[in-house]
Length: 140
Image 1: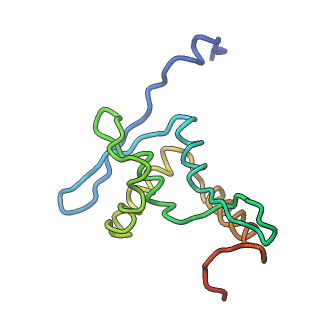
Image 2: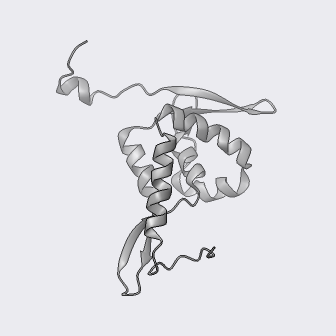
Image 3: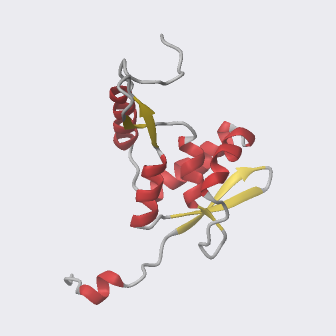
């Protein structure tokens, strides 16, 4: 085992790419994200809401969670992303949940997104939905 120096740390890492069978002979490739892409994906899960005092506050939003993850990880066989961030809503509306879940499961595995990470996202979302929230979600 060796300690990495600055040059080694800054070299472009080869990211893992795996084929995901979607049924009916269809497949896609899914890859690991870079640190920057992971940050961008996590930022895409933030939504600004206005409080009663008119102040902006950022809270987690799980809207299109799966599609946003797919957008950051679906690629061609060379690792080049096929989708753009603003494709998430359309992907979420047009792709069946079972097929999207196959992509997301592989993306989570490759990028070490654990069930605990997902639970933290939900907890943060619930904490952010205060009485001051302007969310249009129905109350239970």
